[in-house]
Length: 79
Image 1 (cartoon, one colour):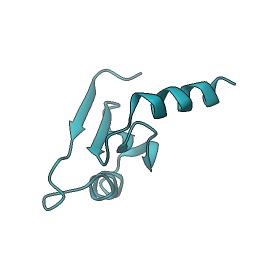
Image 2 (cartoon, rainbow, N blue to C red):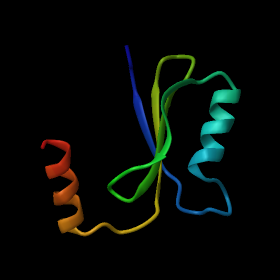
Image 3 (cartoon, rainbow, N blue to C red):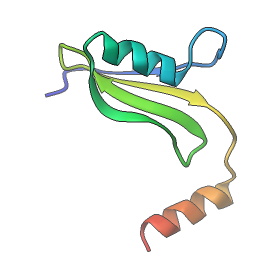
Image 4 (cartoon, rainbow, N blue to C red):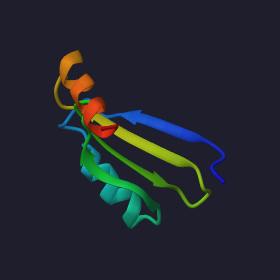
């Protein structure tokens, strides 16, 4: 059971990125929950569980997505 969920937004690609955080966390013993991927909402995102069972979400905004594009994605998802 997840006790705590932590959401990190990584804005500075010079410091870290979602994939680098994911690689470091899983190498240190974190369990994969949602591998890194580009989400429809315009973010690069990933989630993992630390050894205590806390869920971490790491996001980096890649692009702005219009309301029309979001609506089209939702419509396709529920079609």
